[in-house]
Image (tube, rainbow, N blue to C red; front, side, top):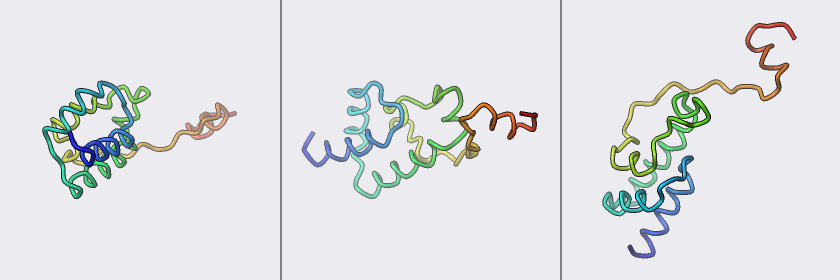
Length: 101
């Protein structure tokens, strides 16, 4: 893998929220050989998908491994439903759920 490909992979890796199985991801990335335009599409999709309910459910448990994401061309998936931001304070959670404080 040359230096340019390594820099592109590092950009993908930095944007991807589930950083596991890096060598498998590197292998999938090398096989894909994305140009700059495709890399931009992939990273934009990752940023968009990070805010979906599927990817936020159970603390990110359903985020695919990076190699699976690349091999499955998951950036081409239809956009999912955006998750609603949840307040971090217990009082506000009850307020937003229609309960009393």
